[in-house]
Length: 151
Image (cartoon, rainbow, N blue to C red; front, side):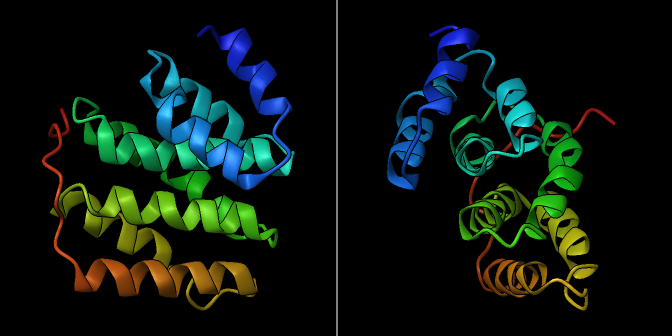
């Protein structure tokens, strides 16, 4: 797959199921998956944005070589997406945040601190995501061994 092919495919998504399946089974395996995910999370189209968020979630689970820093860099973008009232978007942000937090204890703490600022915010979607992520990460131990940060 090329970046051009990924962009062409994502523009053609008309359901969240197809979006999620492409991200989970194909897109994450490309060498440019993280850069693509970051670009898509900033797009306005609902399923394109969801694809970026799902791609981050899938990378958090499957790409054991990605350093913690890569996920720390994407946290502000994920937090911004929690405020999107469109269900496919804020649920995608929720998924990505939970998966990042499950990689290790350091990332769990970073995610919990990031969502804490949303818990009392004025956006319903952000409050829901913050509560759901916090509940999930507080009851489950981190399960993935990730590459430590270089800092």
